[in-house]
Length: 187
Image 1 (cartoon, rainbow, N blue to C red):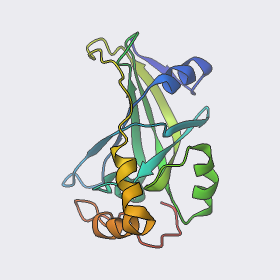
Image 2 (image 1 turned 90 degrees about the horizontal axis):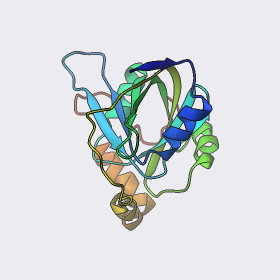
Image 3 (image 1 turned 180 degrees about the vertical axis):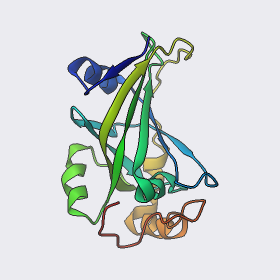
């Protein structure tokens, strides 16, 4: 049933690019702290090479993924087929956070459409790729992407988003450093 891949080959790349959503999971070092899984959508995922992927990270009510990556870099990206042939693909890797003020961000963000409220590009070196059957995953029909977050960020404007980040994105729920205002370094 399950298969290991050494890289994202053409067939896997074609399958990944058809998926409308993906999940990102991270964990802090401390077993006392909280794990995190975040669903992602929109056209925010890119395959940059056989073992490298990026995705856009938007301003939100939390900063768990970024805080965990800053602490230890571990990340898992999972995609599941909700239509067609069942399949689940997991990309295990080490992630780096590139904030808006960094040169890496400016270079990497050019691979994406522009979205208001983008706070970082998450750059992942993938070291393990696996798939599994997904036989028990239910079938869903894709109706479209939600525009709520983009509209929210657009309505707030750049300064309003920065103000929101200052209030909500400085620390994780466990007190780990998240976003530092005027951040120039990478995690």
